[in-house]
Length: 377
Image 1 (cartoon, rainbow, N blue to C red):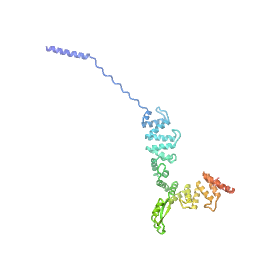
Image 2: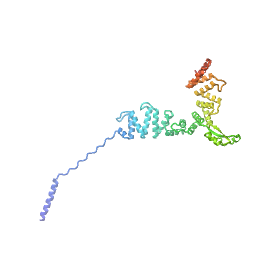
Image 3: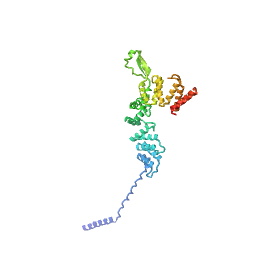
Image 4: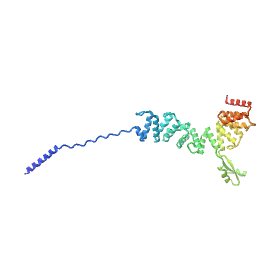
């Protein structure tokens, strides 16, 4: 019995194995297809998508052509402008160089200076120097703003006279900065002390033009010698009169009169015609300096000899009216009017023609001969 059971069990095992071997094997799932990498966007697409490095590279490529891209300077400028506006100093440098050398059309140093300024503002030290060179050479009219002034001051402290004079002018007239006469005078004074004739003229003219002020003097001359507040200045007459009391009187002053005359005189004696003209006008007017006709004629003559036409006309006016002379001198007046008119002064030409109507032929011939001799004809 037991043998029969075992036999049945063995038969069952073999039957199961046979069934297992006869059953077809299950198929493996199909392998997934390999993923296809997306195509890399073109340089133009990257630039259009806001990639600043791509904008710069595309602008550079368009400048010369290459990498399958045709040369197109106009389109290059557009991409470089975009890159520069996004902070790429290299793009600003290329734009500055391009406008300076005419890559984008006609050379334009003023626009080049604007891009040199932009590159300098983005940190390019060489761009700053190039911008300042163009500014000091008069190729751009503006210093750009506070950053440009800081760069100029860095040059000025290295004793660069052109930078010093430029800073003085910037603060004197408010070119890109708020007017600050104290700073202007400080810069001019540095160059004036060092002997620069133009700085001496500018400093002198600023000082001489300072507004009037009032001081207080004692009515009693005996007390005046001990007046310790003689140099205290009041900005208005009312302010001075309120402080005067009953024992003092107000005296109008021009604070820059003495120092202004000093610097103008130094410049005039060294051949600066505008300085001599200003001194002559001041002495003639009796406002900025005490009236002195002799000194006025002296300084106007110095200016006229140095070719200043306005001085020639003022001398002609004096000669025509006889001021500073024994009598009117129409010949001298005509000669000075003629020389001033020859220098382009329209009102001198008109004055000469009016004067000529009252002169005789001998006087006119004499005047023409003197004018010709002075011109070296």
